[in-house]
Image (tube, rainbow, N blue to C red; front, side, top):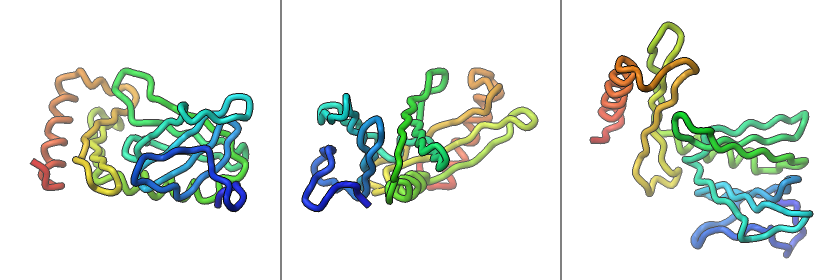
Length: 173
């Protein structure tokens, strides 16, 4: 459910061919979701500037956590090992259908996920993601538990073997 009156348009401009399916106002701006991406129009002093709209494809959303008590939504993007993961925080009073869309679209982008033990309780995960519409190639990523060194030859070997097995299972050369 949008917080805008009938005939009033949210301050989000989506890419050609996309349609806003859900939206919500946040203290930091306005969020909207389409079939393909999460859009964020940041506000400054209560006004929105369209050139500051951020588009995050669903397959690039690593996680989204909603705290009902505080009204805080945290969205973290898929990152690069060793670099800070992009994270966005929003305070939303009435999320409407946006949370449902967020959960559904991010889940739909995960094609495959497998945890591989590396050192006792520590593990790495091989994850295959693709745009929920399925019109782009699968991207493969690794996630490492805290304390797992991806430069360690044994970890690299385990990761390569896990990726080869995952590709065979999914049917990707």
